[in-house]
Length: 218
Length: 251
Image 1: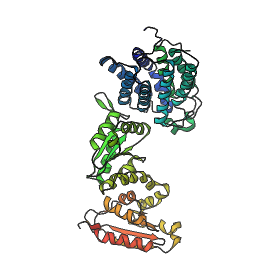
Image 2: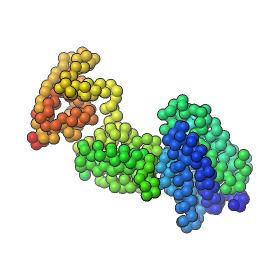
Image 3: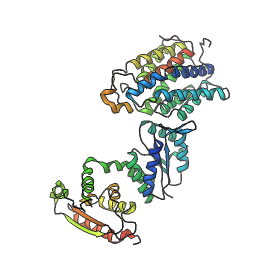
Image 4: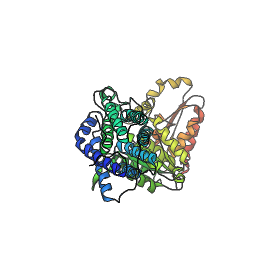
């Protein structure tokens, strides 16, 4: 894997390989988190989904743009994940793809806009707000940090690294929260004391994006 | 043709079971189950599948439109995504009902069987949850308790509604072959809804299609109506006439 300053189609493909790797590596962690506050399927579902994403990327013809890669990822996740993460991440990658258009390379501003589009898609689909103990609690600070970094003149990998670090902090901060959305909300106060699995997987995915671009993640 | 239904559940068994249940009361309505998610070649696992929902919608789509009913979170989101992928003209004839799955599907199927429009079928699904409001459990429960004793409904005299006026009642035998099935139940509930009266039929709320059907009254069984309120007499007359005529069906 080469260091890449430029976010191009090759980066998008590396991002997915790195995501599949870290999701598989953290499968048990995600399952455990989801077992205590959900239905214990998040790790298994995501692992299945991203394995299918890689199989599809490996089997198909080379795709022309980052957007084409992300769109194919979205369609594959929607068909294979099965749980709430399917439509949520499916929407995120679809909206991210739409924000990129036909661009062959993604600059810092476009990288931040891509994360914003993904985050807004998840909010529109799941109708969760910040503080509901969902993946929105990772995506929202990630978006804000990415936009701040881009405005301050960061490189594209630095924008992704800023997003990943903020997503990780956001996921950690979900631990004391009481879930107000999804299956975990049925648990009420018993949902406090564990990180939200969706917020944790968001941090993994965004960390993979930064790693694939050679960005430094804390 | 009639409005078709798609039942989306995390569980293949739930989706198929709801279709089976609803089909009993709506034999001519196209009901398609989209439950569970693919798991290789094995049996479906718990989850919702974009592809299954999309295929079910394709199977159900017809001239009169489709109502989609869902269970929990990701079923709703998956159905929403499938709808977003439809062409605008196809999208216009598909509705996502915000309804309890079992009650909504049965009420929608009955409405569709009776020739309801897309709007009417959606409304029937979304109002169905009202038929299980806690306060409505009581007549339902008292009915169930009364069955072994042969219709000794005791709770009615103590009900607060009884003080609104004298109680009017009447009893008739069901002459038609099919008894009080879905269509007659809908006829009674619809006719009674507009009347200013508290009406029970064999102990259950006469304005609820679901509860009327749950009585399972066949040919030869007795229908007993008790009504109170300003329109009590009209309510009893309406039910009496409908029952005596066998709902226009063969005896």
